[in-house]
Amino acid sequence: MRGRTAIGRAVGLLLLAAGSPAAVFAQDDGLQPYQLVRSLQLVQDRIAGGDHAALPMQAKLLEMTDARLRAADAGDFKDPKNFRALLVYGMSGGNPVTVKAAASRAATDPQSLAIAKGVVAYLNGRPAAAIEILKPIDPMSVPADLGAFLALVKGSLLATDEPATALTLLDEARLLSPGTLVEEAALRRSVGLAATQGDAARFALASTQYVAGYLYSPYASQFADSFVSGVIALHMSISQDKLADITSMMDPEREKVIFLRIARRAAIDGLSDLSAFASARAEQGRNGKGDQDDPRAVLYSGLSTVTSATIDDVRARLGKIDRGKLSESDRALLDAAQAVAGEVVAPVRAAAMNETEAGPAKSDAAKPAETEAASQADAEELPPVEGAMAEQPAPVKPADAPAATSAPPAPPTTAQAAAEAQAPAPAQPETPSVLPASTPAAAASLDPHDPTDAAMLKARRQLDQIDQLLGAAPK
Image 1 (cartoon, one colour):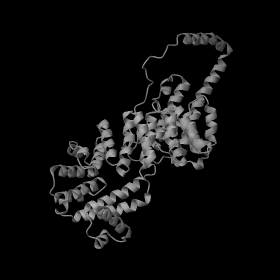
Image 2 (cartoon, helix red, strand yellow):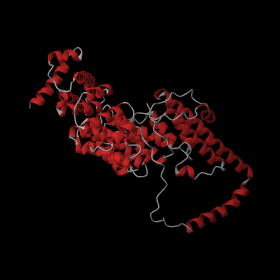
Image 3 (spheres, one colour):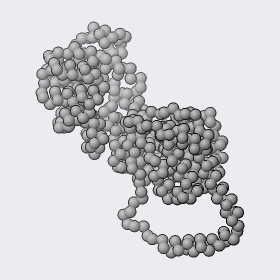
Image 4 (cartoon, helix red, strand yellow):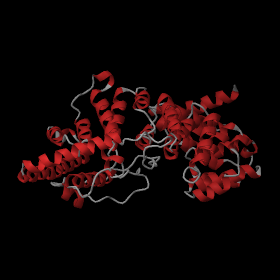
């Protein structure tokens, strides 16, 4: 009870203090480091649940805790709770200089000092050194308040080289600290890792749990990045019904934005069915009563069929889009799509004119051969091979932070200009990979020697280049 009272006093003093941390300590200089750190955790847990108003409180508590730990002496760290608080403070976004200096004054067990050394390396951006120090330490063997953060840090460090081990560590972090910022971060990272591993079931479960508990976290935009990339990467393993089940837990506006982002990525990656589904859901809105004229949904829907047989209808829809309602990047994408559509139509019409000039005799002579070929194909149709799976693109590795969007140059006037003026920008570490538009099976079936197919292939390549330039997320 005394511990809870002290923690309550720490938060109360924070709310009442109008000056520096020193003013707070002048009112109550008996607060222990573990009491301040626990107060910090309570505020962070509120933030994870969607209380954005608590963000300034987090900044102030970090400042207060830093000042208290800088002033701590060897006597303070005789209490193991205070040294664990120092480590938790470091893994909660604390100052590595403070952690290193305070740890040097503490007389504690070798394992705790090793964790402090690993935390300092982690905070200073030396992941290889951090994992070498922390890897032998089992988070389940230390007190839960420390173990949860340790599992989260180790899981983050091992995500690239040992993703399966990282997922296990993230599960341990959630087990040790449910309903907290630690669980929010662990779930968010699990979504991206599951997609990278091609584990559709785990991806769907982690996404469902995140949406149910942390949709309004200030870090939810990072979840959205991983979720959209994962849906694209696992599109052959996740049904549209499952996708709809997950998004139905969101509020209508967030659901619409998610579907718009999926529609855009799917359209540019040549996943026509997924793009059409997501575009329709974005246009219809919740229960089919949404805005039917959202220009983004119309644009992304058009992109999904920009190289199809209904190209004239697509061009008409694209022409009716209100450019004033699009972001600058999407206006450039619209210009490029219209130019691409124009180039697709050109060889089709040219081929039709050549066929007309050749005369009806040639067409009539070709009909029996076409009929015979079709009959032979029907007769020779083979049953599916047992165990065979459709070709699936390599998984997209989503980033943990939102991708930066490059500012596009002036909109192109032709598809050729789009290809020359909008060459792919150098890949940035935080930008999710974009699957080449030419990789889906639909593109693979096109004949590069056929004028129409060649135009379609060129269009897909140009759209892929444009997307790499503009970034993956609509505004």
